[in-house]
Length: 211
Image 1 (spheres, rainbow, N blue to C red):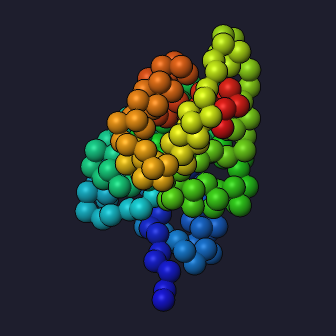
Image 2: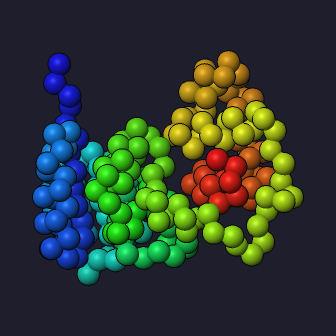
């Protein structure tokens, strides 16, 4: 039985970056290159006509902000996985992309293996970070909350499942709990870690070494 191929698009304002990524990824038999695009408008026009499994998206483009473009992509094609690929290494940029619906964030200094691993993790429903991004998120911040926050064994268990991309019904089925119970744990985790959404929850939990 043939393994299904995943279509990948690259959106970056540097043609040489696009060419390099396409050359690298086209060598992987699981991937099929949908195309390379230097503007957001060009990619959106393409996406409206052609399904894409995953897009590698720079956050600075000549005609648009990658963060807003990510949000637009998710509206047009919710199933399309967006991975940010950028030179911008600020925590705020990482957080903003996750809030807009991205499934991960990589710096352009990532190795080929890191890139492929992150693509596979994102396709499997996980939030994917390159090693450099993990280091950024793990750096101590003023006002760290871990000293004052205690998570129960069950909360830690559910937190790890949320981080792996599982939905409330999936978690309930796996742990033999009711959806209501899982949802209550989810709300408690958001409150304890002072997170507004799941993306922020995962980022904070990673930084605080809860996962």
